[in-house]
Image 1 (spheres, rainbow, N blue to C red):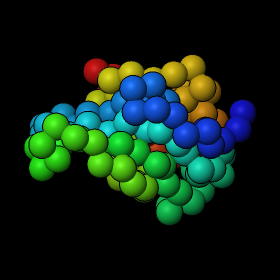
Image 2 (cartoon, rainbow, N blue to C red):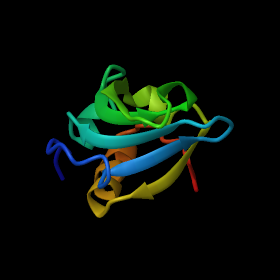
Image 3 (tube, rainbow, N blue to C red):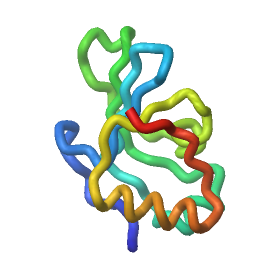
Length: 103
């Protein structure tokens, strides 16, 4: 299993996460480290497209810490690719926390 280093289009993300109490959506387009390495790095990050009430229907792009996405308890996983699920298995096996609920 490797990194999810190939940047995907916003309409074909590796995974889509939504905040459970707010109108925010994160689409993971790239993760820089493999799961086992990211699990041990609190600064591991993903390149994401984010839409919120403040973006007026547009996507904003940038890096987000994985801990902000995966370990808040307030996220729902709306969709994911097979590659992301494999990466996530490696991340969890290495001790990474993923508290998102399935959509």
